Picture 1 (cartoon, rainbow, N blue to C red):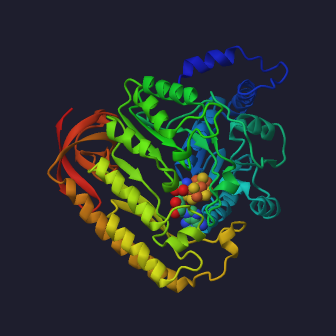
Picture 2 (cartoon, rainbow, N blue to C red):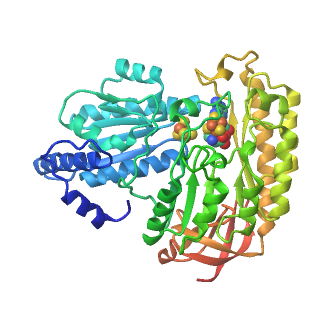
Length: 487
Ligand code: SAH
Ligand code: SF4
Ligand code: F3S
């Protein structure tokens, strides 16, 4: 849903004083209207608009979910702010690593003090952390000031949950274990007018042995291709030129549809959307990367020459314990195929250091793969034990000091390679999607190359959202300084 007027027309036909609709999304439209009336009344009493902030932790999937939350909050009548001094503060949480959780608990303490000064302030928590029963228990016991808790499977019910909280004085908790439901056509408020994430699937079936995502995001569900393409068409009509197709493992898209479809075939359909300029996707699991996908990328004029292909470890023995279903050799073979088809492609990756049982030799194999592949950039993570995952109870958890030493060596290597790789386009002219006025120097704008690197160059605000040709004058480590050639 992108068009405001269209949405208001739909709302006009909803009778908020009639019986609750049972069907979605009509049921949520009904609650948006009911909550809107309450928010209007409160704001008249206060003599000012009610304000709300949504803070996002975690991945692109969560970022997209937050746009859906904001879409609903705005329709209900809240005015959004970045500041946490708000009437309704929402944390959309992540639990992929333990430190993500710690950050949330830390910040909740600060919110509690704010709430003491502003007693009608509401605090809502949602996202992946809320799918862990221990977390909810802890919140119920020690964080009684939280008003609303819900999970990843029912964010489409946000309007209904807000309404429920507004008419009661109690903590509202609604967590679903899993779902098969995908509710379309709810409001979304995009962070950027010119680019957007598009969910193509939800959940994950892979159960990598270290990873909590399948437990908190549920089983894999693909959206219907026609719904995805219709969403992209609407986004383009609304000014979007770049889409990022989102899923935990986009390479297995479509397997569970009534009429199965491959990810490569979906990309072919997306390519046909007129006016769409750039297509990205995230994330690809190496085990499901098909020749068909490489072929589609090679033929495409719109798919960006960038591939994020998480390695996790360069040791086949560790990969097996991680339940990744590929070997070091198979991974390197995929890299060769990608480079043969698309010589200029940028490769990026995720690597975990210190998985249980990782020996120095295993680690050195990871270092070798890093040197061989020459990643344009790599996200490196220290293994974090997630309760409930098979790896958490494996023997030979690696001592912190050993992990830290390996992590530092890996990071140094990765950064040196990134710096060299970044320089390879120096002197070329490439197309850049302008994203922002530069934070530090307002005479500059910042844009993104198709390979995902940033470039700063002289320009004005009106260029935001446009694709322009920029000469890459100088590489400065991980970004470029450039000069605009044409509009
Ligand atoms: N679905 C994506 C990854 C989602 S999580 C994929 O399979 O590629 C993003 C990254 O977090 C993972 O690639 C992994 O490198 C890292 N990660 C996941 N669980 C972790 C854990 N328990 N400890 C450390 N890093 C982890
Ligand atoms: Fe986690 Fe593996 Fe699923 Fe990625 S593919 S979300 S790492 S279980
Ligand atoms: Fe975190 Fe959930 Fe994404 S655990 S990485 S926000 S899917």
